Image (cartoon, helix red, strand yellow):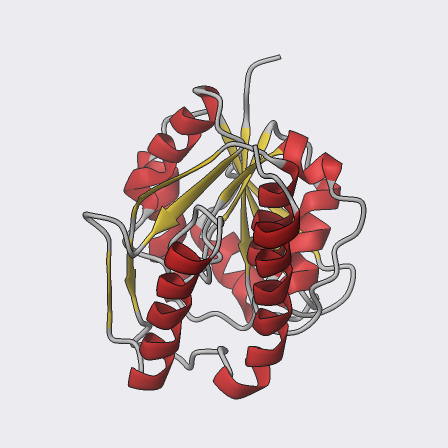
Length: 238
């Protein structure tokens, strides 16, 4: 079987900026991929925007969320796709289309998780609200210096997972926030899967409203922080 990549893009009432995101991927990615748009409800105007601008594209496919929300969209994508690797890509990300092939190459080189990072050399983030940026950087510092977790950019949802990792996880627990990527990475770390970081860029969206609600999303992140600490203390990671 030829290795293939499923790129999963969760959407919810996106504006026309989604056109730029998808066009960049379709025009520039060279590996064998399919592009899955996961949506919550049939009347979402995002679907009409995509259909009008990419008529008949064999690469663009639609998946209806089995429930609602970001984490459930990812879980739906995991269960309804079958590529050798799955990548989570944000609908408003106009910067990182050019590292998708690099991520997939790292997968073919033998890495089970490829984690684009804003906190390694060559990575950066711009435009974040101050409190969000401080907490994100503090989490990075804590994981780097006080745990065995090898990923500096712990809160970045943009990741590639091998199907081997996804098939090993018996249950997905994330419900609130944007923690599913962190959950999968934390569990893969405990199981000893190979992972690597590469530089990426994040520029806070200027069109539309961010759906990241800082204080209501903190408790789910803390849950996985504790999980990673327990792994570092009680488990011998390969």
